Length: 262
Image 1: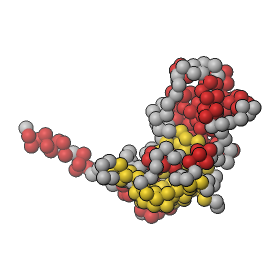
Image 2 (image 1 turned 90 degrees about the horizontal axis):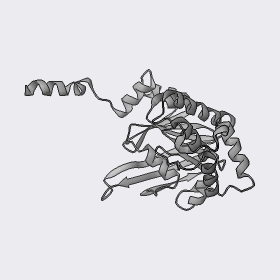
Image 3 (image 1 turned 30 degrees about the horizontal axis):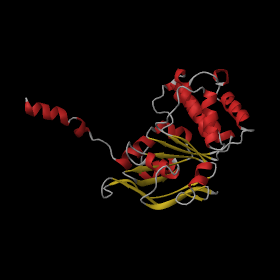
Image 4 (image 1 turned 90 degrees about the vertical axis):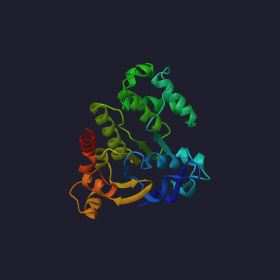
């Protein structure tokens, strides 16, 4: 299988003197056509990894290629072959759905003779064609997420990044987003890179997963392989075994402290 995302000692430090290691010497390969999940606790380095691979920020050291393009030397080419649904994306509420997609399409230099038909096709795909002229500020959260996914697809990139795709969504909207991701993987042949700390999402959607903790990749493989490696029974147990959990005595510590002070 062809490798479409490859990182080599990819590293990003923050803070004065680089004291915060957000991503620490990450070596990773993602194959064409697979749905890959990067799983980890909050603050583990997932979003930083996505931002590095989309040329939003630059690494402290190391590098990566995305569809053969170097993230340090070919930023424009990388952005042409990727679509990104960020964890906290922005929408222009005073634009209609059609106007917003038209604006994003222009940013990606989608040819003007192709763009209108592509917008119509995406709005139909996401069941929003009858609301194409409604302002986005009146859309529900789930509808906004659909438009954001459509905006990531507007230039028809082969690689899609979804950072916490069901974050802040109610169960019905989250199910809709998961179904859309499945459809993109199964029928459109996209390579999909999902970041999440929600285990059921990666269990349901991903062919392989990596687990990152404190910037370090600590496990890589299929879910069954990672469960076997950790000698556990579920992904949840494997995740806790690898990343560490809060012991019962820690959970009850506040009660002991309260008793000692009374």
